[in-house]
Structures are given as structure tokens and as C-alpha cells.
Picture 1: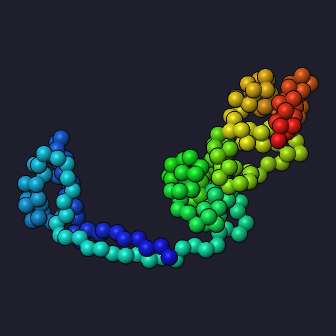
Picture 2 (picture 1 turned 180 degrees about the vertical axis):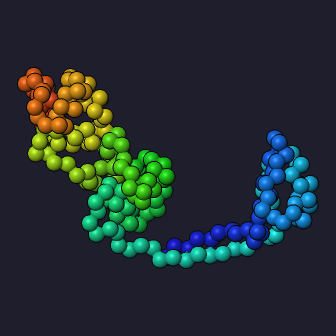
Picture 3 (picture 1 turned 90 degrees about the vertical axis):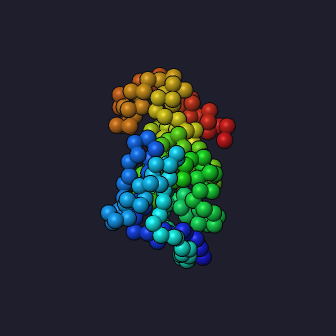
Length: 194
């Protein structure tokens, strides 16, 4: 069970005061505004409520089962988080990203940048990225994700032009034998070392 203890303001509105321009924004009735304006002239910015606050406890069951057939990287991360029984903040810390970024991946359908690939693979314990390694371009994609390389960084490491990778993405036609050999050499070095 998750228990969240929140402080709720019992007021209808909150008076926000700013020192710089003495601006008062209010949702309170006009009769209440005049009494609160005096406080706005204090030396610091502050938030005041018209009435006292009270404690509220929200209780919700912790999700037990993850997504049965995860289709996105975010769903894989969410399932691992549930399996480890850790918070989203802790999972974000393990991957090395802000919790907001993890929210984008898990619940907003955004895909992580390739440079986060190694950290995600390490946190999950497996490679969740769907890659067809039957083609040369698929093998390149796997290499780039496992090493966190952009297309430019991979091309530089392989000693080829980035346009060569664009041609490979469209199909194998258009690259020279020398370019293919350089790429194969880099990929084979990695495969031999693992």
C-alpha cells in the first residue's frame, strides 16, 4: 500500500506576493484582499493562506503486475521498477536520468535517445531495444545502442562518412566495398571482445 500524507490548504485562494513589483494575485473575494495586501509589503516573497490547513491521507494499492507484453522501452523500465519494488525516483537514479525523463519514457510514449542505451541495458539487465540483427544496418543499430553512440560518433569510429549510414538505412545499395569492410571490421572487433 502507498500512503501519501499531503497538506491541503483549506482556503479558496492563495495570495502570492512578490517583492519586486508588489504584485498581488488573488482568488479570494475582494473583501479579503485588502487585509492581505499589508502582508505583501514584507521584505520577502511569501505565500499565505486565508484559513488554516489540515492533513489528508490518500491510500492506494501498489501495482503488483506490470505490463504483460511490453512494447516500448518505457514499459520495460516500468516492469523492472515494479519487479524491484522501487520508486520511480530510485529507478531514475539507477539509470542516471531525471525522474521527469523517466515519466516521459514510461507514460508519455517518448523514446529515449540512443546515448541512454548502455545505462538502460545495465539497469534492466537485458537489451529491450527491438533490433533486427539480420542486416548490416541492424547490427550497426545494436552496436550504437550498446555503446551509446550517435550516428555521427559511430561513423567517426568506423572511419566512414555519416551518409554511408543513411544509405544503409535505405538498403545495402550505394556503399562501397571499402566502407562495408570498415564497418564490418568495427562490428567484428566488438563481437570478438564479448
